[in-house]
Amino acid sequence: MSEILVVDDDASHRTLICDVLVDMGYQTTEAANGKEALELLEGRLPDAVLLDLRMPVMSGWGLLEALKKMPRARGVPIIIISAYGYEWEAELVGAAGYVSKPVDLERVRSTVQQVVGPPAALMVH
Image (cartoon, rainbow, N blue to C red; front, side, top):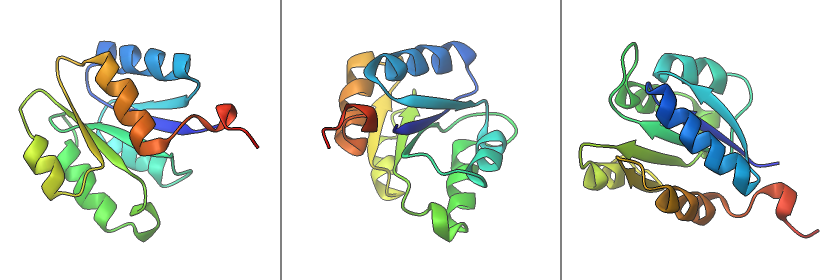
């Protein structure tokens, strides 16, 4: 099953996004900041990361910097979630997609499907 890591300091945003992804057939993991996400990424790598940029403890920017130093994580697509209009910056850092806040759930659905493809459980073998 395809797994998506959702990193956002706002628990209600995380829950809302995870609920949508689970309804689509994806498995989700949550982190409240970049430090928590980095700890999770040291174990199993997800199929994609939805990443807020402004968070306490370790920001999304800090996580992006840390991921550059993790060669095995370089292939994991990052989808930026931000209320601050960073779409052009998302492209500069090599993000695979961008979703603005307030979160447009249809945009989350279409961006994740475009970046990750259908959930593995739904793929025909």
